[in-house]
Length: 564
Ligand code: FES
Ligand code: MG
Image (tube, rainbow, N blue to C red; front, side, top):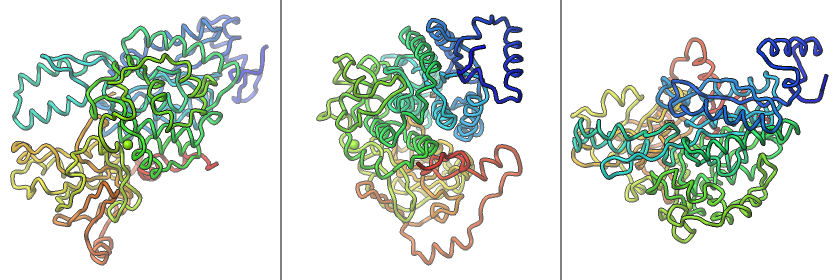
């Protein structure tokens, strides 16, 4: 009997007998002794009929398996839960931590020597990386890849930036149902993840920058043959990792790799969700995620990637322009290129061998950024003592310095009930405030932060207003939207003490967010404040009792790694 590989070892009682039994069951499934002597690569397939973004995951798993076999390994495909943004009631973020636990526990429980995790739709890659860091097994990430762009009557459409734009036009009465229906057929033209710089594209680029993927893997379109070849190559490399038992995430993740990821988040004008996920992933690795460093990187690093919603183009164009390594080359002064990846190559070594050609329109030179000014900024002040974020590159410049009167909604349900009320006391200068939509509050910190413009203003042509909440916002959305206010309203933060008519000052340039109410009055309101009811049972109870605030990644307190 060959020993040494992790997959041969067993912690299920009598080691020799357990191994004898396990092989017996596998022989019962048709495997030969010779096959079972090979190193085992687990392939986490997140294929699910309820996850249309992952429609190609099964095909991808087949190609990874082919690569594993070619390199002399034995592939075993296994499932975890699979989370799609539009099929996760009440919201996908609530399930991210559960998927991370599922991933971690399966990686630890299954007799495998290395793993390839297929992710893509927004929460899946963060959940997988969180689980992989905690399991600390040799692991690679391969995204399902982005959709191709859609074409509709002379326009190129992007999911879901144009989903929002079209819906906004429909709400404002600018287009009718028939036109909306025609465009609908072309919004999601292929399988794959949203093909703008939304959360899926952002997290794929971050996974690659952290070192979890083969270079160029994050941007190849879902339906391209290149993605299938990358899957094959990923499977082959996973066998090397299975034989070596290395590298584990703890062998290549460092504070500098997270700093690199933050820089890429800024240079891509990536999703604000990336901030929460980076904080959670760093926390698993025992690394404190530094919001102030993220803010400083935002000031230093120009937005170079010309993808919607900040720019004009789509993921397939980013891929054709040289993908993430071409971006690393452009922004090399802001990166620590000595950081290693799963292949053992450093980012710098990848940059050095990567084809020199790029498309300056898609990956802009440093002196010709996509937007003047910063991408994601971190605000602090009396309304957000532990921080809040704003995506300046998606905001209206003149609203970024604004003082206005609060119009307060106490919950997502209250917002839905009253936002279109013709009697709502609101003007274009009002500040819309949503409370109790944070990690504990909603629960699950839904993407409710881009509050709709009240219908009575939208129909008059108002496109943007200052909006503030403890919620998140889709990476494909735009507007002057302050998110992730911490501490959240439901944790007793000042956001929960705001009342209609209070003055709020947003000073984005000064990175300040203040509630202009006397401390004595706030203390009086705080004394009257009551926490929300605790859920009685189940996962909701676990979530409520253990979720941390957004500046700590909204992970569970008991899942954090030990600080190094
Ligand atoms: Fe799946 Fe956008 S909804 S990636
Ligand atoms: Mg900048």
